[in-house]
Image (cartoon, rainbow, N blue to C red):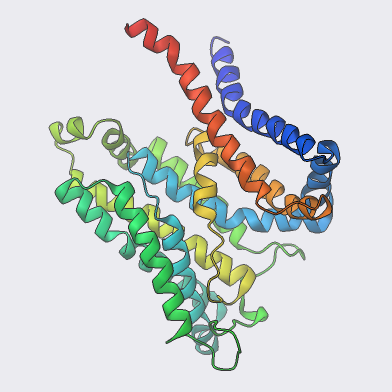
Amino acid sequence: MTDIPQIVGRLLQALLPLLLALACGALLLLLLERDPVSFYATIIERGLLSRLGLQESLTRSAPLLLLAAGLIVAFRAGLWNLGVDGQFLLAAVITAALAPGLAATLPPWLALPLAMLAAFAVAALWAALPAFLKARYGVNEIITTLMMTFLGISLANLLIKLPFNDPATTSPQTLTLATADRLPRLLGSTVHLGLVIALLALLLVHWAMTRTALGLRLRILGANPLTARHVGLPVTGLTFLAFGLSAGLAGLAGAVEILGVWGTVRADWNPAYGMLVIPLVFLARFHGGAVIFFVFVFAVLSIGGETAARRADLPNYFLLVLVALILVFLALTEWLSARPLMRKRG
């Protein structure tokens, strides 16, 4: 019973930034002479209540959950892997290039896992340089991972336009994986198996980070690297491992998106999911179960928001405004919650 106030407080602390962002979004809509009730009702109707919209929201959740799982690993280890978008896109391109050939020569139960394994490995290797610079020289990983994102996006587009380009198409893109060779659909819906893979991966990450010795070591590294070295933990190895797992899961997200939805990658395609997922992970306080809730809410906002923005004659960037507001109010609530602690220390 004594934990109930703490649980309620944490729940309010997590939900408050989202609710405040939606309230400010409503005020912005009023200033733009739009009806916020109609706008949000359209989001709920299109992204949640309609059968097709709900399936699209669940499908959109799959790569977001995998990205969130990778970010949890990095953040718990005290590392800022801001290169997830580059890792995602580069792995997606490799998946799109390999999958048609694998599907033509191997059974689906082997071709699809091999494509996903290749995506995981490519993304993990792409994060090796930031990991090395962080572990060996203490270089700020925010700078190096952002740098690798720009390089990854550029390299992905180069691969699409040159070696992986499908000559049968007019605009640059990779070969298209046949619909029959993609991830199976669940229960006759449009939701693919990638959602199950993402949920299992996220729950496995949550279990590993909270219930295993490896997770404890990574959390100690994140809490205080000097303490980690003092107690004899292999800081360099743990840094490489955390970066590799985080980036690998981002790469797996790219593979799932291609194998489950698109089947190909066109030049200049970049959904930029990574930066959108970061505030959701912080809202959830790195808790796997809470991440599932916030990711699904965001997916509903994303799917329903496209229709709502079109009906309200607004650009789709309005959703990014909501994400920015969530970040602002998240920072504000964190500051307010830390003030009593600062007073006690003072």
